[in-house]
Length: 228
Image (cartoon, rainbow, N blue to C red; front, side):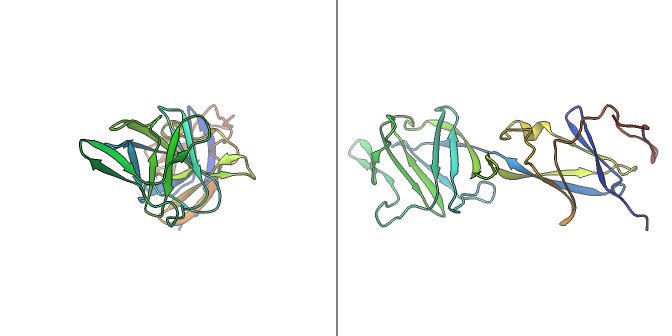
C-alpha cells in the first residue's frame, strides 16, 4: 500500500488546494465559524417562534449566544434558558376580532419598546412589536457563542464534501462559506479534513497564497518547482 503525506498546498483564486490524498477518494471538510441563516415569519400577534433543530440548534452553555435580525439591524442574546416559572412561554390569543399576546412583557431598556424574549430547550419565543410586526418576515443569523479568549464568535460547523482526483489532488471553494462567515479570513479558524469519520488533518483556510497549482493528466501529476 502506498503512503500518502497529505498536505495543504495553499490558496489560489479563493480555493484551498490539497495534495497527496488517496486518489479517487471522497473526503469532507468540517468548517467552523459558519453563520447559520434562517427565515422566520411572525404570527397574527407578531410573535416569532424558532424551534431547536439539528440544522439550527439552540444551545445553553453559559456564554453569550447571539441572534441577529438583518432587516431590523438588531441583536438578541442570552446566556441560559429562561425560568419558565416566572416567565412562561407566550402565546397568541384571539379576543373578539383582535389578537393579543398572552405572556410576560417588559421594557427592552434601549428605546425599542416592549419585549418578551423566552429561551427554552425546544424553542425561542420572541415578541418585540416596535420592530416585529404581525405576519412580517425576517432573516435571522445565528452566530453561535462569543469566545472571549479569541475575541470572535465560534459560529457553527459547515460540512463540505470533496473528492480527490486520480492524482490525489482536491480543492475546496471558499466562496460559499465566505458569504455568511464571521470575520473571514481569521487566523483563529481551524478546519478539519476527514475521510469518513477519520481525521486526516487540521488546517487553517488562510493558507499562503500560491501562484501555481498542480496539473493532473491521465493520473500523472505535474508540479511546479515552487508554488510561490
